[in-house]
Image (cartoon, rainbow, N blue to C red; front, side, top):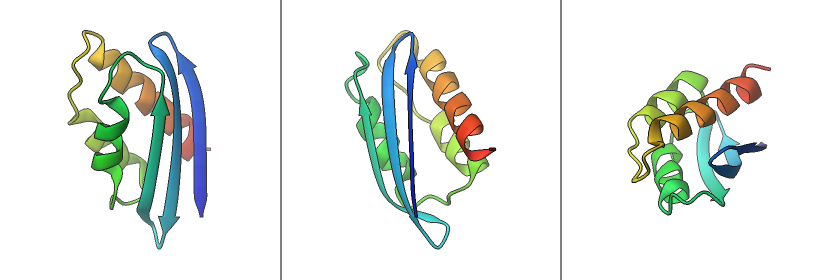
Length: 88
């Protein structure tokens, strides 16, 4: 199945598309207009092959480091988006 989500934050907009088969993320596409250049690639690399599980996704997100001074805010905002989308 496919799961897509989009949200605008103070640091920019993010659009996430997940293709899930058998509970595993088989494909990830992330688009963002954030100033953080590696944001999309880091998230895609981290989540590819990951279980489609809120805890697993947020744990992997927390291990990422961005070149931005607001990297903690970016991680928190994306985690909140996941919680809102996957807990519903």
